[in-house]
Structure formats: C-alpha cells, structure tokens
Length: 184
Image (cartoon, rainbow, N blue to C red; front, side):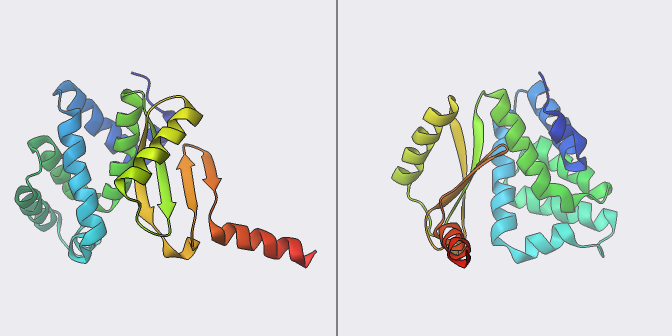
C-alpha cells in the first residue's frame, strides 16, 4: 500500500502508520477505528481525559496504568490499548488527537474514500450529512466520510476541507469579503 508521505513526515503520522500496519496485519482496521473514534469523542467531551493525555506531571508508569484503566473502561480493543501504552511509555499521549486524524486518513485512503472536515454553525442532522456527502461524492468522484464540527463563530453556512481543498461558504467569510470590498 502506498502511504501518503505527508502523513509519514510527522511524528503522529509515523505512529498512525505503525498502528495502521499492525491493525491491517491483524485484520482489525475497523475495530481499531471504532476504538479510536471512542477515544476521539472522549477527548472532545471530557476535560479530565484531555488533561490526562496532555499532563507533563504524570510519570510514564502512572500514565500507562491510567490510560490502560481508561481504555479498559471504554471497551477499547487490545491492539489499541497496547498502542496507548506505547504512547504513554514514550510520553506521546499528547499526540493522540493527531494520531487519530492520521489513522482516519490512512483508513479512508485504504478504502478508496476521501475525508472531509465540515464545520457548521449548528449541528447537522443525518439527512443534511447524507446530502452533503452525496454532493461531495459527485464533486470528488469517490465516497466521502465526513467529520462534522460545530463552530458558532462562522455564523452560518459551511466550511468544508477535503485534503488541500477548502470550500468556505460561511457567513463570516462573506461578511469579511463584503467589508473588504466596501473599504475600497
């Protein structure tokens, strides 16, 4: 499999490639992806968990034991749990969000899909996400997996990032463009 050299260039990318290769060999790509999705959600929703992975105070052993306990309580698969232990021992738990993003990109590429990061002012419902995915599929020519985020600061509309492309139809950008045009 051809690996995106941009992903391999970063530290988190190298960890993600290693995890991806192990998961592929164990035929557990989707199982690991599910575990990582759970961890991603925990990072987003739990300040305590986010603090744990970013704590410079915890020793390697304490971080390893704590992350193993968290992984166990979340029902994380064995491979991902061992991987988290490696991150803890190497003092790289802070890289976890970037590792998860890189793994998601690797998995999407492996499946022949594209990944899109979609930012909206309000949460999108399932019908809106499906319609957007179909629209993006027509644009890029392959299935698109969406990572939806909410940012009220964009006021309305969407900001969509697919690889190096960005489609910004947010009201904030339109207002800024109009303000620049009015300045002369």
